[in-house]
Length: 323
Ligand code: TYM
Image (cartoon, rainbow, N blue to C red; front, top):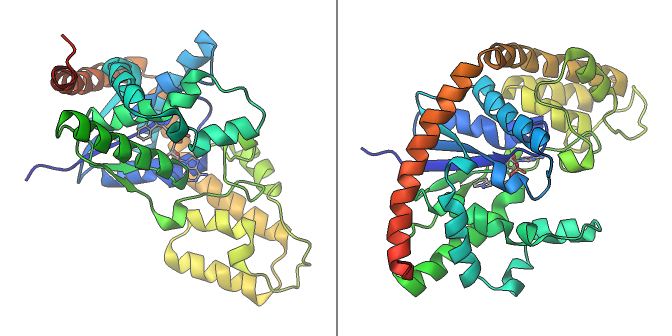
């Protein structure tokens, strides 16, 4: 039986954090055996925020190494850079000509940036159509992401429907794959963990930094003796990501029983984070020391993804009337 097509990507705009891992990458790794999995670095998208050549090149390569260190297996997964498929920018253009300005103005990502006082570039504004092109040019069926990308997948479905209606059946409608438990991983301050909020635990942090960051998790002022509600404890909400169900319940019970102070709870959190990050950080160092391997993975993945996309684009061009 042919496998369903799974596709997802991450922007190369900063260092990955545990929100990216639990919200997205973990699912990529878990699903890679059962889906025709295609994972990329969204480096065209990154240009909306990073306009520094060296920085963009470095961050883009780092995400590839991060993916491999997290367990994406290039034997199973097509791993590539978005820039290996310049065809997506052409498809995004056709979508930009179909979608309206008022529709794009509804995008949360755009509204948030404007609300934060940023002057939006046209690239930022049309960003969701480039994402739609990434997804649709490969006939993707499922797209594992965190909650913050849900609206973008809805936009993708809408523009696919509009295209199909205008030019005839061309695209499948993809489904978002979002796990409830990890759809919004909280940061140190309890808001969504995000590079732009400065509240992250980097995915490959050194032990000393992990200890320091865990001590910064924001809490209320209950004393050690007080019983605590794990559901509202920010420390617990982060800690549970690293635990299996039995461990999670045991820890929740400790919170409820009272006698667990926040200092101790943060130290326990730091231990769990270090135990998880240690091995992948070591693996990452090995991969980083093998640039030829990384080049090879990107070359193979890029060629494969580009061949698929260019074939699809020919079909699209003929439907649109582009000679
Ligand atoms: P990006 O780079 O902002 O984030 C990458 C992935 O990490 C998830 N994520 C989180 N999940 C749970 N809790 C959090 N605190 C958290 N922070 C980040 C995001 O939801 C995302 O899944 N537009 C996309 C990149 C993209 C893309 C695509 C994704 C471009 N083209 C095509 C899928 C398909 C983005 O900016 O993600």
